[in-house]
Length: 357
Image 1 (cartoon, one colour):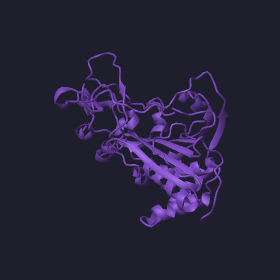
Image 2: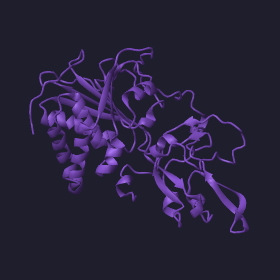
Image 3: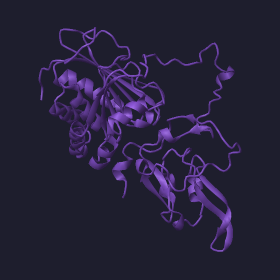
Image 4: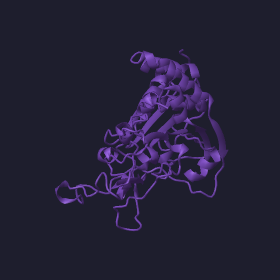
């Protein structure tokens, strides 16, 4: 469908602006492109869309920026969106990992992928003001065999007030349907459920401070970078908390099935499994005591390699305190400050589509 729409609100430049905050692998970049094409091709608007990200690595930060204007006003800037009318948060693990609500005002509509209610999310975000809309995009994507970005596209269409559901389906047909026709109906289901299954609540200005938008600037430059280009911040160390890179699943340990073969330990890229001397079948052996979930990034390699199904995949939300969670026994300090990171997960955003229950 093609139509001519009126933007409900505009900023001082005459633009309606959207910012998407995500981690790599959830499809925010594609979602931003689809929104731009939707506005230009189907809604009779001028539109601009671009993304910002570093290394193309699953789990690394991604931002997408979208601007709309009426045909009589050209879009003459290509800077990041500082004060969005809509802010889309594609992963609730991003809360506390950066200033994702920077530039949000009382008029901003925040859409977040979570199963928590708006009131809880408001306090977790320490949100100054705005309207919070919650949609369990991960659950819907799993059930519909689609992707998180399609669910978020439907939710954004609903919250915008000017993007018809039919138009969101049409842009999915043009963008994805031609390349993956077998997945088109699943994508339509995800868009429709995202449009329908969200709840919202408005919050006036509160005691939480307003967070202004600031460009991300590196502390290192040509004048102060380590000599020789050496980067002492290693990608994976014992002080890294890898949990923000997980995309929905964790390995669960069923101890009575374990034969202590050690295949999980040899395949694990982050030394998650804790083996110690013990007894197995009446003989002295190295026995699996449990998993250090702080270092587990959810790649599920151990689940694939376990010969006795002593390790199975589980939805992380359903197991907030896994029974066999165990701090890494090889760490000498009794306490350690962990650095929160969200990068290099091996789990693809389509992994749940082939998950066996």
